[in-house]
Length: 75
Image (cartoon, rainbow, N blue to C red; front, side):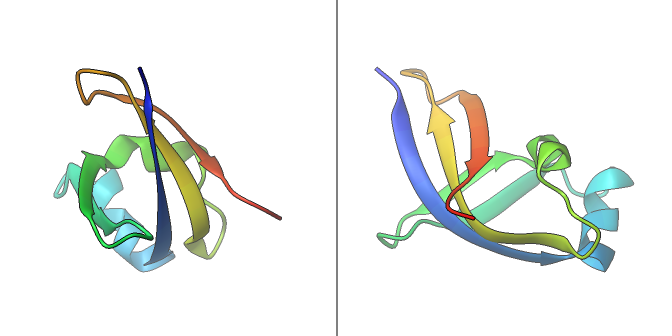
């Protein structure tokens, strides 16, 4: 059974360079209900905009806590 977590991300474009340069490989974020979740930084590539990564996102993990998907919530 998959687990869905909602996080608010506020990562400016200049900080994303750390991920792209390989200096950082994991993102730590707080879920809306206060838990801390870690996920691979490379998944941000699918949601990056010109100014960075901002918004509320749904993260999906499988039963082994492996990342499955990320999608932007709302508009």
